[in-house]
Length: 153
Image 1 (tube, one colour):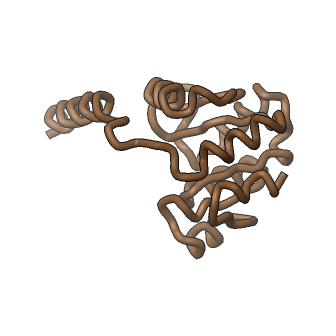
Image 2: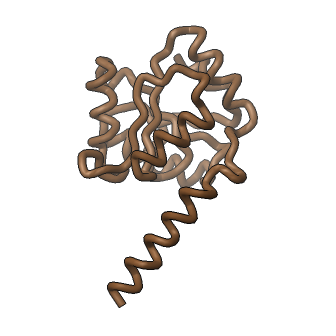
């Protein structure tokens, strides 16, 4: 069973790697939000539970026109969220204390990661989870549309 699990996992990972961008696009309003943040010189970063190579590749393909100060995915050095190690590493590398970060996410895991890292969790309501779940897991604020985010800074 262990052998079969490994084989299936490997096959699934290969398929995902080949097809992960087939239907992936930034949510409506996200490009404009990133433009506004970049114009203001706001350092931005990506932290994902996807494996780091996939995260870096997807960020380049989907978000490559914006200047991200850091892009991190799960690896031996970066444990999966809600462990705050990745968020804290980004803060350290960028040189901004965690308490000065707005951590925008759309899952309970994101809200828990931000809280554990000492960052400000902001829940994105255009994502996967509803307001109740985001608030229950630490969201300090909620945004309905990406264009609201620059106003928090």
